[in-house]
Image (tube, rainbow, N blue to C red):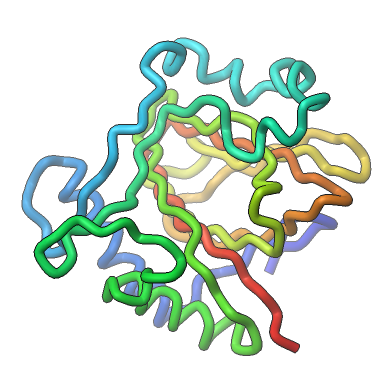
Length: 219
């Protein structure tokens, strides 16, 4: 485990890795317009008006400095060039994968079960979102997630090393910290709380898959 005061990065346990690799293959097949085993549907959520040519701006410290005074207007990212993986054709009809019904989807159920058993056995785990950044110039602009406080876990996949990153501002020091992704799957955990808001963003020049979960310690 690699840990600093805010972000911890964990190696993916073997059982979870097997499930994630299968999921990644099905996402690739869907995005490449071939037929996969998962009845996966992705939403076109690209910000066409401002996206690729301004990707570096929306993850820059300069842009962050223009929005920090309006913190609750940025619970969600203002701008993105990314694709939501948020619908399955389940039981014959499209269903939104929210935290209350993620267990109905076999792959999400396996991911949550493996995550719980191997890393968080005393916690409840709630699905929050799935996003694919199909680079180059894919991004999710600075935001706080203050609408959904608690420990946040993101399981991320990068097709290539050092071509995508997670960036955040340390709420204690104000330092901007950029964390490059390595090739393959990894797990990042960080806190979301009102007292010390964590501004963060993502940029990718490769294919990057991100599965988000909220973790609540039951002890």
